[in-house]
Amino acid sequence: MLEYQIPEKIRDLVPYEPISGSYRVRLDANESYQNLSETQLQKVFARLENEVSYNRYPDPMAAKLCHAFAGYYGISPELVTAGNGSDELITLIYGTLFDPTMKVGTFAQDFSMYRVYAQCYGIPTVTLPKREDLAIDVDQTIEQVNALGLSGLVFSNPCNPTGQGLKREEVLRLVRGVKALVILDEAYMDFWDQSLLQEVEQFDNLLILKTCSKAIGLAGIRIGLAITNPKLSRLLKAVKSPYNVNSVSQIYGEELLKEHDYLRQAAQSIREQAVKLEAMLRKLAEKYPKLGQVYPSVTNFVYLKTSESQAIYQGLQKQGVAVRLMGGYLRICAGTEEEQQILKEALDVVLAAL
Image (cartoon, rainbow, N blue to C red; front, side):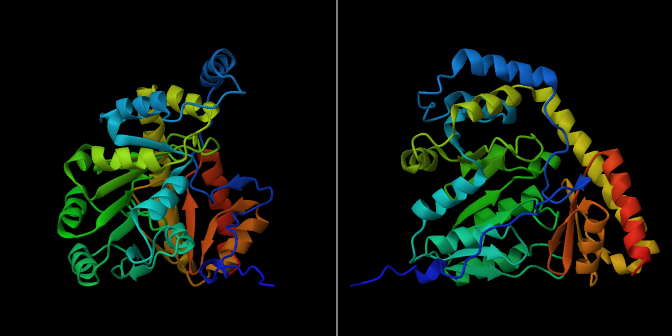
C-alpha cells in the first residue's frame, strides 16, 4: 500500500511564529500604534448592523472597498483587486501568473515570505544581491534579471526590513529595463512619496501591492490590494477565490478609506515618530557603539546592524519591550512618545550592561 509523502518542496518549512507573550511595549510588527477612534468605530458598527447579513456571502468583487481605495489614491477602480491581506494576493500571483518552469527573482534583504510562498508552488527563486549599504543597484539588477532569464521580480519599496527606499525614477527605469513581470510591494509607501500607482496603467509588466495593515491601521482586519493594468486586473479577478474578503472587512476598509484627511494625518504623525526614533537610536549608537549601525529609513521602522543583536533583543524582552530579531539585525518600529521613551530607557539599561 502506498503511503502519502509530503512533497519535498515544503517538507522542511516551519510555521511563521511572531513574538508571543505580554509586553509593556510592542515595537516588533510594524503595526500602526493608532487604533480607531470611538466615532470611527460607531460608524462601522452602525453599518454592520444595518447592512451585513451574516448568513449571506460578501460581495465577491468587494466593489465598494475597491472604489474607496481608488478614490483615496486617485486611480481607476478597474485596476484594483481586493484580497484577504497582501499575503493572499502574493500566493495568488505565484499560483497563477507563474509556473515551475519560470524563475522569479527576490533580494537578499527583503520580506522573507516572498521565497516561502514561491516554494509552496514549486516556483524556483533566485536571490539577487544588494549593495553593501543594502540599497538596490538598478543597473546590476536589470542585467541579472535579463541574463538569468527571470520571468518575475518581486520586492518591497520601501524595503521591509531595511527601511530604505528606491526613488520613483529608479523603479521606473528598472521596470522598463527588465523582460519580466515586476511585483512591487508598496506596503510602506504611505510613509513616503515615491509611489508608482499613478504610472501602473502604462505598463504591461508591473503589478503593485498595497495593504491596509500599516499606515491605515487595519492590521487586524486583513485587507490587501493588487493594482495593475486592466488586462492583468481582469485576470486576477477571474482566478481569485470568489468570496475572499469578508463583509466585515469590506465595511471597515471602505469606511476608513473615505477619511482622506485622517489617513494622511495619521501617516504623517507615524512618520514623524519614526524620524524621532531614528534620531534617538543614532544618538544612543554614539554613546554605546555596540548598538551598531543605524540604517536610514523612509518608513515607520528603523533597521540596525549589530554584533550584539541577540543580547540586546533578550535584554529588551526582560525590560518588557518587544522588537524584531533578524539574525545580526534588529528592526524596531515607531511607537507613541511614551512607548519610545520606554524603549530609550530600556536600551540605556541593556547597552550599559554589555
